[in-house]
Length: 165
Image (cartoon, rainbow, N blue to C red; front, side, top):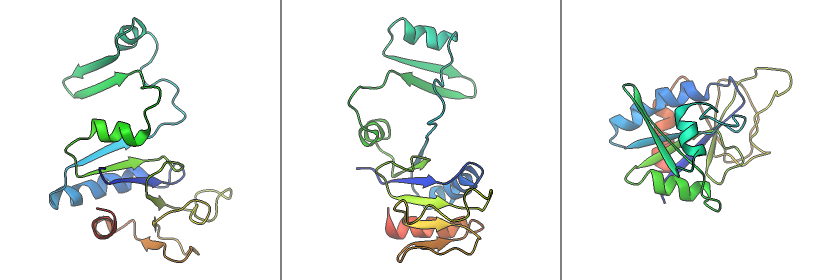
């Protein structure tokens, strides 16, 4: 199984910023890095009416969209395929997959925490099993949960390398 880690946290907590700063450190250490962005509230990424959507609607099992700036592959999900199986199939040859989101998924989780609203004043750690919390805040955490600084992505890379990769 490819080492896979979910970076969880509320919207605006800094997950994307952390990942975009972490990835270069992992690349510099020789890792081939893949990412997954969990979008649970996005009903249909391939919008109705687009040509690629119409291809799939007509029955194409997979549709590859090719542009100058990149590629996107859309497919109808295999009915019984788990997220672990999807990652294993799509990221063959990668050393690590970093997921943004999937707080209820089966992977080790690193929480990115900032006090953004009065609705959430403490990390999810304790409610959800996490291996580390990336924060500048003073927070109480369960025993064994490591605190990492969002200002030091190399420290996060060290933690991943020493504990999960």
